[in-house]
Amino acid sequence: MKDNTCCFFGHRTINEIHEQRTKLTDAIEKIIADEKVDTFLFGSKSEFNCLCLELVTKLKEKYPHVKRIYVRAEFPFINDDYLNYLLKSYDELDAPPPAKAALKSP
Image 1 (cartoon, rainbow, N blue to C red):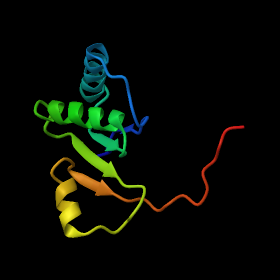
Image 2 (spheres, rainbow, N blue to C red):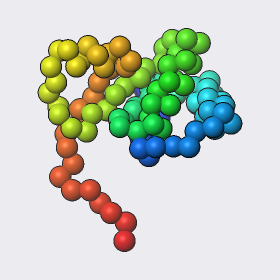
Image 3 (cartoon, rainbow, N blue to C red):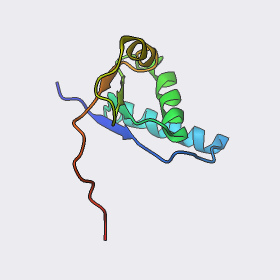
Image 4 (cartoon, helix red, strand yellow):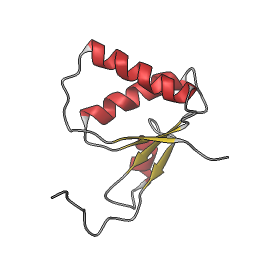
């Protein structure tokens, strides 16, 4: 079976208000229910990512099949304490090989 994936990698800070939280929750639930998205990838060091993790975690109560995966851009090897800490919030971890060069738009 193929995973359908949604990625959350956003700005470091956000001006979050109740309306944004509600709209984002509705959008996430819609893609779970209608688009069969079952895998969510999260970055780090961002209020946006933390908010999305919080909302997906809450929706996981209703949709327990959903996976939350933390994508680490740095430090592919971590100690067991940090691993266990991360696994309290995420179902899996991924550390893709680092990009040698990032492309920038002109």
